[in-house]
Length: 298
Ligand code: AMP
Ligand code: MG
Image (cartoon, rainbow, N blue to C red; front, top):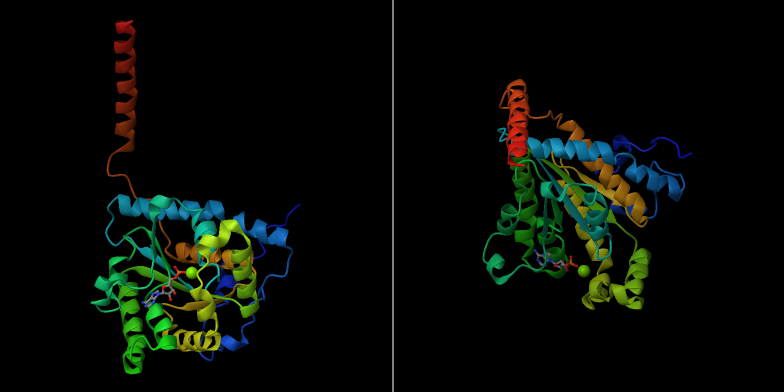
């Protein structure tokens, strides 16, 4: 017998970045609030699926019913190469109805994107009402990779933290729940993952020789993450720094964060814009009519 849930939304939220946060103090291999076996972890992962799918359906139903002010959720995923963003998307979002998910991945900006403000492409990719949006990388690249490689002048980058906080506050004010997750891994774990990408035919496609060059900027990236997280983790749009050397653990935490966000919306099923009793009577009558016609045709 596998025990009942012993992980919770509160446990997941304990990974929140709060004042005084030090990335260097977070052990990527730890599994805070979970010390059970892998089997129990996997059990925990599916334990909440029914509730999650019901709540997501309710969210989508509200938008489909055209209810004004239907909320949306935005899950922002950041992390070093091989930190497991793709796995979170596959496993966590795999539980959901794809109709209700708006997924966007952000790579090196195109020529067109570069001509605009850094938030331009982000604004175009925001989730629609009633949807759960997932960002595989995000506007944070503009203060992460840009800081590490000096892709923008430092004063421009310095301004962006405030612009991001303001932008996210506007989203929250207009009905978006924002969950920002940093999948925090160790360089050892990254090496393991990259080695796997080089030793397995089915993983070559994920490998990019540039990943090794990026990896050599490890400390600068950690520094850039430290600054980004401490300056942009607000009460309305908090960051969660999730230890991610244990992939199933990280996926479970993200799933519970999503569940917490959905629960907090306190959704209801949209009311009928017709009289169900009248419609039931019409349905019965139509069935009788059809039956009569079909028997006459025989
Ligand atoms: P991947 O997620 O493996 O497909 O890689 C996407 C690459 O695009 C990463 O190396 C990111 O650092 C890079 N990237 C994403 N957004 C930006 C941006 N705004 N400016 C420059 N590079 C970016
Ligand atoms: Mg990559």
